[in-house]
Length: 260
Image 1: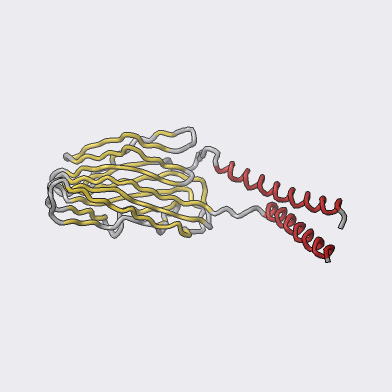
Image 2: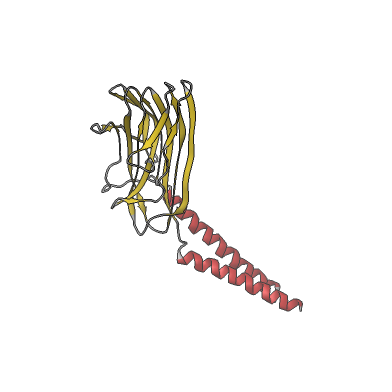
């Protein structure tokens, strides 16, 4: 093989790799474009305390198309709920942090988040996590009980509503202890693992419902749920990459035969 032929094969290989990289890069950039969807249901977030009417949580939207909650606080029957921060992202994922204080009798708290998402089909990968801490204020014992159970944080894709298979957050209980005793909860994770199909899914929701024992006990938790479509390379990119690899193999074979 002449030097000119070797250089030609090298150029073919380099060109195939370069074009493949460009195609994959353009696909990634397309996913980063701020999401808008005219026909999707609007995002929403609300809180319930002891089965009350939904208490709507205000949302704002940033330049990336994400829906945000910041410094929300509400009280009902002496119970206090705060959501210092949450991000409902069409990417798609939901991340949140909240705190509750359960004054008086045992109470049930519910948090609900929904966001429209970019159409997400199969195959996909799902993940969820939940972590935080508790304080037994009166020292009479502490209990965190998912409602209806067995796990507190439930994540679904829509439509129709389909469980993602990564629910997290088991029950927790502790006996009497000195007043103000703190407890660490979690972290609990599930995934990453294959998610539901076939889709495409256009909505993502996460809910967390639980009861506390009252007496001023507190809970502070952070949660997360996501679904990510596994991108399959376009046939044109695979063809170019395959051509480049075939050219490299041919070059190597001829080079070995020349040496022999």
